[in-house]
Image (cartoon, rainbow, N blue to C red; front, side, top):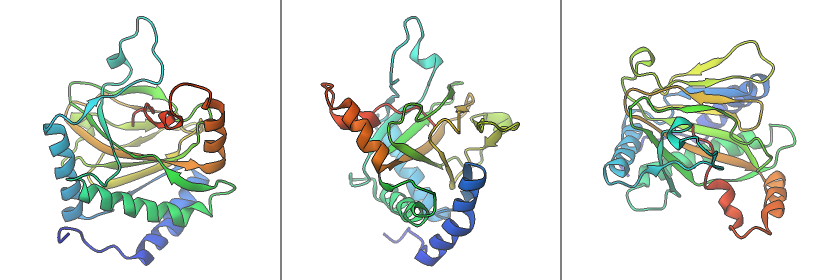
Length: 243
């Protein structure tokens, strides 16, 4: 794949140990810019745009319905789940492998969490009609999700003009953190109640790719709780909150 620039394992390890781990432990979130570089990032963006153009992205579902509340008043994104092995997802696969390497370095340094698996990737588009996602927590009920990772794909993005900021409300803190969805930016944060967050209304097409890394023990317990339901155990990841 000639469009992929080389990222060394030592660079990833340094990034994980010097930036991601300390920030997660101290603040609960962290973002890194210039993760893939222009060529590789553009390749990922092209693949996501093609998914959008082809109609592969469908309305994001809610984990539960509320009578009288329209889905779009809560979340207005269109999404698709990909493993990276699909045809036309080669650059996305490269991105996922890079995030996997970063998290594997971080995993043993983040306390007692046993992070050994993740969800598929959720490719998401807010179509630019003022859609957003109301304040929510990704994992409010111990479903196993431990770290949320979001890769943004939006070139020439102006938060003033286009909106679409992800605002984090760190638990117990007097401040909020506004994360602009800028091209080639990778955001990490704890998925649990420590980080309620919202996607503010977007007035331009806004693309992101999200994966959730699981604490294996909490995940196993969640599957045990749900194993008597008719839905398969992996349905836990089919309707996560948007990002």
